Image (cartoon, rainbow, N blue to C red; front, side, top):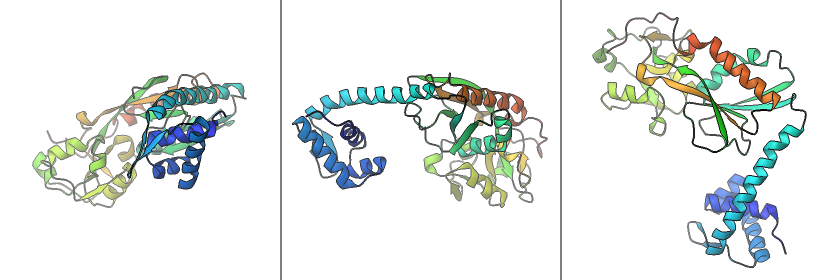
Length: 304
């Protein structure tokens, strides 16, 4: 009896996740459903595919062999799904764009410009730190600071984003020397997000002392800075646009980041996706001064 493709998808998910709990969560089904589908697949194949350990499921030798073939099937299914988009009315439809919450906030402020002349295209804007899987069409377009080493991904540089120190009015350091800034309260990212731009610069300034208030996304960081909780390093396009914040000094050179537009090569030729890509490139070109932190006179010169 041939194996059912839906059972094979469950097998692939369990092999990747390693536990019934994680696989069930990924598939949005119950634990018994995952266990039942795996049992049905093993009965159909006539071999045990997993060793059931107390804390995880481990592939048997038969499972390892099957996994190679199922991965190939999954890649083929993903390719068919992507290419099928080109068989429909490609001028109309939805384009799903993923970016971190700061960049998503910037894009949201310019949606009328992105949709100008493209009213037949619907845009889904997703704010996430997670790298959406373009091969599986979890997103059509990504804006990211780093280019992942993934097959089939085409990139285009959008620009260079500046970051600077911001504070609420009334939260005034004596001057902008390193000693004066170090004496001020700060807000920053938690340990899991210490890789965010400007965080290592801030930690070096504070001699490794963590800020008393820590958050996990840019919008919360901006909100905390706006209330006067402390100084914060923010993208200039976010801080400069906020009337509740003022910039202290010029952009921090070592905190600058590149912004890249990512798309799967099978999707970049679709008119609706190509149109949104072109609009994003034009937006970044038009707003280059804002993104690079130029055109605003800061309170004073930044600390050396």
